[in-house]
Amino acid sequence: MNKHILIVPLVCAMAATGNFALAKDVNFDIQLKNLYADRNFDDSAKPSIGSWTQGIIAKADAQHNLTEDTALTVTGSLQYAVRLSADKHRGDMILPFDPVTQKQASEYHKAAGSIGVKHKQHQLSWGEQWVNTPLATVDYSRQLLTTYHGVVYSGQWNDQLKVDIGYLDKFSPRNEEKFRKISVAKQDSDGLAYLDLKHKAFNDKLETQVFVSELEDLYNQYSLGLQYKTQYDDVRLNTKLRYYYTEEQGEQRLGNIDNQYYAILQEVGYGPNTFGFGVQKIEGDSDFPMLDGAVPVLSYVNWTQGTFNKANELSYHFTFNHNASWLVPGLNVLVRYMDGQDYSVNGQRGFDESELDFIVNYRVNEGKLKGLGFQWLNLNYKNDLKGDYMENRFFTTYSRKF
Image (tube, rainbow, N blue to C red; front, side, top):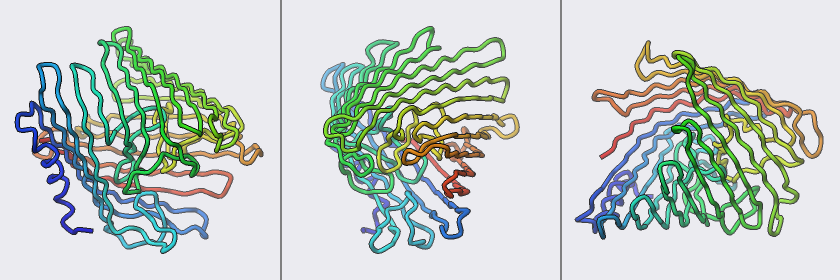
């Protein structure tokens, strides 16, 4: 790979916008990300996995006015990461890994873009898509990001209603370079079609999300989400509810999928402290399905590393968030504990799992170092199948907009 690849993001961005001499808006967004990740298993037969990487994510977008209300749009992005640590010869879902040679990639990159048209509050684009839906989403928890390819319409119909309609035919998982067919359990789909409606009411206190999707030849998935925020004097309340229904369709390549997900999370805040308690239940004989490439389901009321998506699993979530800006501006601490009970494996029930997370975030919000951030994630995961491990991730990020 070209050793001068680090300059490519800016070159691509400028090339993508070079024909927009009369563009109303040309924006550049660059993020530097340094990630050290290490996972140690309690089982001595399982060696630790992880890596230390330095990455850069560069995005550019521009629009050229055709009329007062209509414009052509162009976006371009390039992501690049280089391994700074020695090759552990084990896959870690951060770097590409070759199972034949048993080698981690020393560097990798993603390059893509999109073109489209925008009319007032409506936009249609084709190409790379950075989507956030209850099924497909961009994953920010590792080094480079999962992105998608397809056609997406996004429109703000009024102050309360936002509509997204999309067809995604490919994706590029976080530890891969190229786009390929979207897959689940290594079964390919020709594409994901979806309708995503978001509505706000009661002075934006209540947000409702309705999601309908078809992952061709694999399954249909429907989701309803509610979030209600209010405040009584100094007490803040945030209630989240989420429901999923998933059923196989088409060629049924994944077998019998017919499950439901129910969840509620209630948060109560006072001063710098916020406490949360949640319950989550998976109904059905199959695990809640997820896209390959470890794409997270961020619409879970409380997404975690352990996922807690097993067949018939009942899990409880406890969270404590402390805004420590009174001590150091931009400092935040989060502690959360999840306990999953009585899940099924191959039809046999009675398995349990748990996870304890400790997360410290610090971000500089003003001054010459504005945009600099640090995060430490420490998690302890345990289950009945001898998969216990402790993981630490250290992020150093720096973001700049031009």
